Length: 276
Length: 121
Image (cartoon, rainbow over all chains, first blue to last red; front, side, top):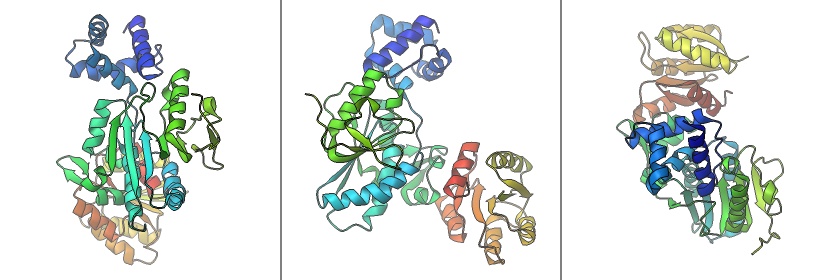
C-alpha cells in the first residue's frame, strides 16, 4: 500500500466513525483490508481503494471502515467488570428500581460476546429475583457485519473457549454442526440497534448501566469527547459506566467519577449538566 | 510452584501442553494413560491435571472416577482436554468432577484462560 492510500484509509475512518488509525502501520491496515479485498473480488488492496476513491461507493467504503474498526472480543472479557456487575451493580440497581425496568447497554458490542455475557448473568439472577423485576438489554455497534453475527448467536470452537466457563456453555449453547449457537432464551433477551456513537445523535437514553469497553481508546480525541458526551446523556443520573482497562472519561471528567477500588467503573455525577 | 500432571497418549500433545503450562508457572509431570496417571497421583498428588478422554488401558473418565476415590484424590483440579465435543460428554465429565473442559484443537490462550477459569492461575 502506498503512503497516500494509508492516509486516505486513516482519514475516512476518522471522519466517519472517529476511529484512530495510524497511517504508518501499513502492515496493520493491509491485514485488515486483505479479507475485504478477497471477499469483494478485487485483485489487490490498491484496486479496492482506487475503486472506492474513484466511485465514492458507499457500501465498499463502509466495508473498509468496518474492517478497520473490528475489535477483538471474548465472553466475560477481563472477568472483573462482569463480577462487579453481577455481585454489586445489579443487586443495588434492582433494589433501587423496584418494578421499573432496569436498562443495560453494550455500546460498541461488536460480535455480541459482551452483551450475551451480561444476558447470561441476568438469566442466572432471574431465578433468585422477586417477580416483576424487568431487565432490558441492548447491544449496538456501527458494523452491520458484526451486528449480524451477534444477532445470529453463532460462535466457533475457539470463540466459545475464550472466557466462557464450561458450565455456561453447557447451559446456554447448543451444537450446530461445527458451530455453537446460543439458546433462544438468551438471544431473545437482547435488543439490537446499529449505531455510530460519534455521529448518531439519536441514541436512546435512560440507561442504568453502560458497558463501553475498549471503544474510546481507539478513537480520535474529538470523537472520544463526543462519545463521552453521548454516554453521559444516555446514562441515568444514578447510572454506572464501565470503561476498558486504561480508558478514562478524563476529557469529560465532570460527568463521571471513578468508583473507588473498582478500576474501569464510573458513576454518573447527578449534578452534571451537559451544555445545550 | 504448583504441579500439573498432563495425561495424554499423544507425545506431541503432552509436549505442547507442557510448554504452555510451564509458561504460566507450572511444574509438569506426564502420563500417557489413566493407569500411569493414577500411579503418579498415588505417589504425589498434583494440584492440577490436564486430562485427555480417549486413551488406551484406562480412559480419562475412568481415571477421574478412580482418582476421586483415592485418599486426597478430591484435591486436584481437573481440566479435560479432548476431541469429545458432545454436550452429553461434557456434562458427564463435569458430573465426574472435572472443573473445566477444553475441546481440541486448542492454543495457548485457551489453555491459559481455562486454567484461570478453574482458578488455577
